[in-house]
Image (cartoon, rainbow, N blue to C red):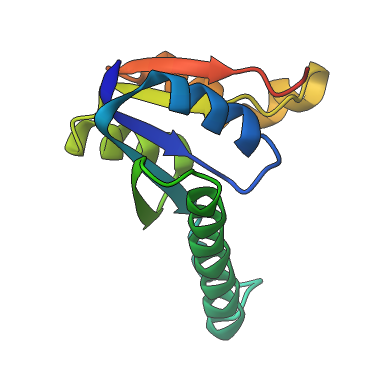
Length: 142
């Protein structure tokens, strides 16, 4: 059993699988930290500052909604806490995991395959390759 688990979410439909696994893995007195990372755009010649601020505010709002929805799916008796950060998802997930001294990161794969995954990359894959903490990858494409 794990005392502290980090559960990153992007609001996708994989929450039920992840929560089911986390419920089995968390110690009775453990804590689940639910994290959502909002991207942050910077203004450029093609984007006005006003538009960029609006997009950033929207991404932050969505991240807050993501953690709230995920937290609401946990049953009473499981200690949860939410964190919302801005930044690059994989790097931020790993930093929060280290800062919070978690024992396990539970993250779902995107379910993407082929050339799309090769070009875009996968947050879960980057976390898996760069984390100093154990990572449980939940297959989302089944």
